[in-house]
Length: 130
Ligand code: HEC
Image 1 (spheres, rainbow, N blue to C red):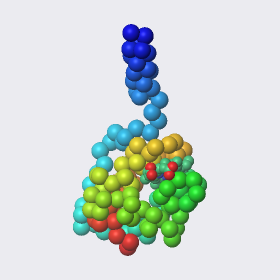
Image 2 (image 1 turned 90 degrees about the vertical axis):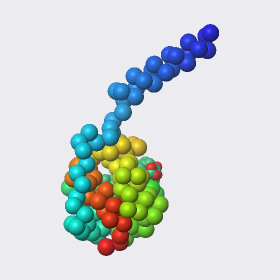
Image 3 (image 1 turned 30 degrees about the horizontal axis):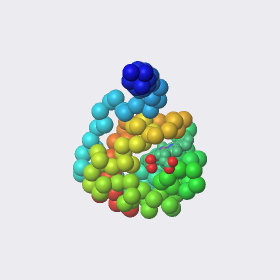
């Protein structure tokens, strides 16, 4: 009996925390689909999202603190194939766990919906090293 009470209490606390403690919710806005005939380049469109504009993924994603390593020259091989399902952004960890979209820890900033859409679109197109 005592044990059951404890389980109920813990569950209640867990639920409370789930609704109020979680800091990086799934994006609430819908991620727009970029028309498939618009090319997306890893070098020109994706790599620049990782550093600059008041953000720096590489303070953590640098080969020491967190994976994947997002530093220039290393990022592509670190992301592909481990963190993507080629051609399927929706089911790729590199889309599903971005700052602004369910990133596992507080990054200090979030990507915009349009930036997240670019990453998804790049994976949808086969995550090429282009
Ligand atoms: C404050 C440190 C920090 C910053 C800044 C940060 N991350 Fe992370 N990120 C982490 C940690 C810690 C994990 C958990 C995975 C690990 O420990 O290797 C993680 C996980 C991820 C994952 C899921 C991979 C996995 O193994 O769980 C992705 C994708 C990711 N980050 C992308 C990014 C991107 C893109 C940026 C910049 C826009 C960014 N992160 C900024 C610390 C950070």
